[in-house]
Image 1 (tube, rainbow, N blue to C red):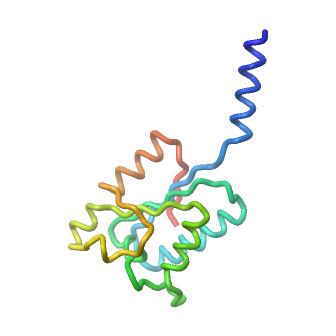
Image 2 (image 1 turned 90 degrees about the vertical axis):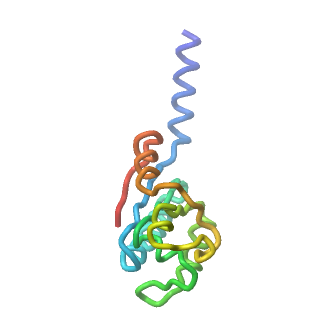
Image 3 (image 1 turned 120 degrees about the vertical axis):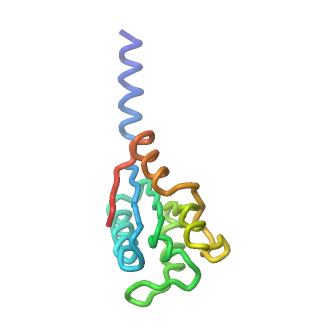
Length: 135
């Protein structure tokens, strides 16, 4: 009986500490990134403990490049920096870099690089139970 009670307490403690895990998938350029950044900011305003990973590939990497601006002419670097300070992780697909002849030093500081954006998204969903959002 004590073991059952201990297991129940452990389960309840884990459930109380659980946080939503979400992967945002960006692959379509500046308009999608503008919308995505706004969605992520709103997401965190409502659920500040959410664990968010933004995975980019194809034209989705463009907003993380030095000097990139939103459709409202704001600098993405500042917006990404603010979201990073709130715990959001940004990842850039290295296959995209190779296919588009881009260099890592063309990107703002902060994002990390992943061998394949598509594989990373699949792993986050299948292995780590991340919810999937594509703005």
